Structures are given as C-alpha cells and as structure tokens.
Length: 286
Ligand code: NAP
Image (cartoon, rainbow, N blue to C red; front, side, top):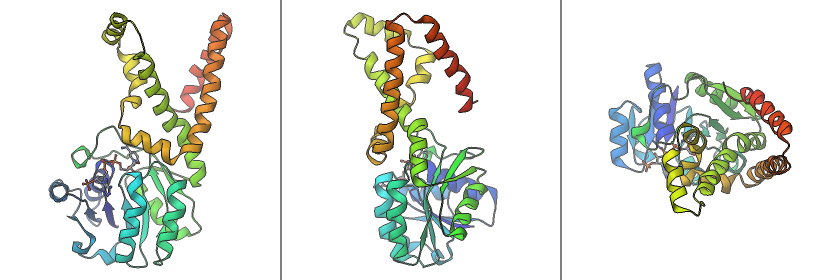
C-alpha cells in the first residue's frame, strides 16, 4: 500500500514503522513541520521519504491513503491545505480520538476535490509524544474504529490499512464512537484528574506530605490517565463535550449513590455494589 502520513509523532511514526517493517511493497511518505523530525523519521525507517511540505514528495499521485496524525485541532486545517494538492482518487483518514466533529466537515472538504474521507481511531498509544516515542507493534491486537461510509470501497481500503498493522477493526457511526469513548476513555481522564485534585485539597500540610509519601501502586494505577497530556484532555472535553457531559452526569449519580450508602452505613449494599463492579470489570479489560 502507498501511504502518506501527516504528523510524524507517536501515532504517525509508529504507523510508518510497522508499515515499512512488515512489507517491502509498502511505500510511506511523511510530512512534519520540522525538518529535524523529517530526518529522524527517515533514519529510523518510519518513512521512505519525509518533507516539510507536500510539494517535495515524489510519486504523491500514486498514494492510496493519506492518514492525518496531527492533534485534533489541526486535522481539518491540514486536510483543507492538502486536498487541493492531491489527486481526486485519494482517500483521507485520520486518527483523532473524537469523530463527530471531524468526519462530516472532513468529508465535505474532500468532496470538493472528488476525494473521499473515512474516519479512524486506533485505540493504542501512551503518554509519550513525538517521533522519538514511535515504536513497533504499538497497534498489534488493539481495537480500531473505522467510521461507517456509503463508499464501501473507501471504507474497505481504510479497514485494510489498520488490518495491515494487526488491529481489530470495529465499524460504527461517529456519534456511536464518541459516546463509547466518552465513557471508557474521556470520562476516566476527568475522574482521574479530579482524584489528584481532591488529594491536593488536604488542608493539613503534614497529612498532605504523608499521603504523597505513602502513595503506591494503587494510586499509580488510578492517577495515571489524570496525569497525562493536558492538551489532549482539553481537546477531549472541547471536541466531545456533549457525550463527555452525559458520561460525567451518569458518573456523578453513581458517586452520589456510593456516598448515600456510606452515610447510611449500608455495608451489605456497598459490598454488593463492589461485587458487581468486581464482576463487570472483566467485560472491559482482562
Ligand atoms: P504527537 O506525538 O504529539 O504527534 C503529533 C504530530 O502532529 C507531531 O508530528 C507534530 O509535529 C504534528 N503537529 C503538532 N501540532 C500541529 C499543527 N498545529 N499542525 C500540523 N501538525 C502538527 O501526538 P500523537 O499522540 O501522535 O497524537 C496525534 C493524534 O493521534 C491526535 O489526534 C490524537 O487524538 C490521536 N491519538 C493519540 C493517541 C495517544 O495515546 N497518544 C491514541 C489514539 C489517537 P511537528 O511539530 O513535527 O510538525
């Protein structure tokens, strides 16, 4: 497959590394705003060729798919800038962690140039950023959403891209995606960050210091996503506001019922509540 990657960071760089390592027939070009990133991506074999602009990319007219791997806020401006410079048979996709705010406007931009857009969200990553964070097998056996499209050929092409890097592809609408990730990805970021903020509200300085000294593996697990990239968290809230608020209000109710059970000394009920969550966790993760 001939793939263009725009935004050579953790996700874009890791995609290029896998595509090139896995099949010599794959060809990958990349675009970054930074010439040093272009050199680095070429030297680590994340791309065959990289440039700070599309004009210097040889054979770009033979591209099958262009994958936009920039931060969410830059996805639509990037497609707007690139689409007029690419041929009409091109398929665009993205990797943004929200879909409703991207898919419809991106499809409209592409239609103006006879191009197609299908949204993607590979559910893989970590808290590191930039080309040096790129790694092999980041996507292997992880889920990836590809948004439904009336253009079955374009949908299948995008699905096959993610299958090449061994992802398990799920098809759904942008709105279904946003509701699902609000509860399992965006809500945990807000809960985990609120947990850290609540601990920091301890008024007694010596107790606060003791808590910080005693924090161990449990706190490491529960605070991990709340201590991640602030810009990414802000973008989740900004671009998935209604689905995230829906999940937060549901969580708020759940938390209030836990408070009520504890205030009313309903120990049997709290144990039953925890027995259900103990059982249900395995529906989400191993
Ligand atoms: P990253 O490592 O920071 O990479 C982002 C890339 O975009 C960099 O190459 C950066 O490079 C370029 N970029 C930054 N701002 C830009 C702008 N204003 N215009 C054009 N290019 C810009 O971030 P990432 O983790 O790969 O995330 C990229 C996308 O993946 C995001 O949309 C995110 O929602 C999605 N995603 C992330 C994860 C995760 O866990 N990290 C998981 C799934 C999906 P230069 O400065 O070199 O141009």
